[in-house]
Amino acid sequence: MNYPPKHHQENNINRLIEVIKTYPLATVISVKNNTPLITHLPLIYNENGKLVGHIDRYNPQAQLLKDNNPVTLIFSGPQCYISPSIYSTAQLPTWNYIKVHIKGTVAEVNDEEKVKQGLVDMAGFLEAPDHKYQLKMDNPRMHGLINYIKGFEIDITHWEGKFKLSQDKNKTDITNAKEELIRANKTSIETFLSKVFN
Image (cartoon, rainbow, N blue to C red; front, side):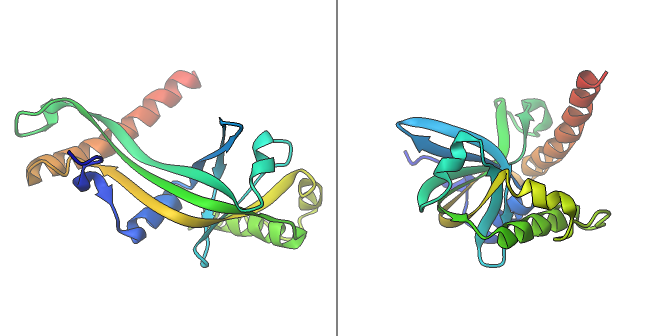
């Protein structure tokens, strides 16, 4: 038996890029002495096909984000429990999700102006489409920040899309699963925030 099932593998690079652009907070995984170091960082996919980011210079993982060291990234899209009650056919409970796994090599960015430009580009991308705030290169707070962060770029060497979206079901059930994914994510955000901030 083949694993993972082919119908859960997404090979369309444009769809994988869209996940990264829509959900840019990556789980960044490096390994040192057989121990994984994990940080969650927003990464921006640029026009050169690289992922660009920055990390707190005092984060232990920062020492591994350079020198062509290998890195593994996970980008997480929407996910939820799928109850058999939403299907038109008899099924078992399952969990649907969208994930993008990436492997790459890291290069440290030492040019302060390039790191600042990366920050400006990231803010511009994340502020879209309304751009209510614009970070500028001459922002006085940037001068102090630059001493506390390290910039880096990731060359992507391997892509893997994992889209488990009830593709093995009939058309009606696929549509029902899609609608449930949308509904459940809206509901879970509202429920979670009301519990945490009340």
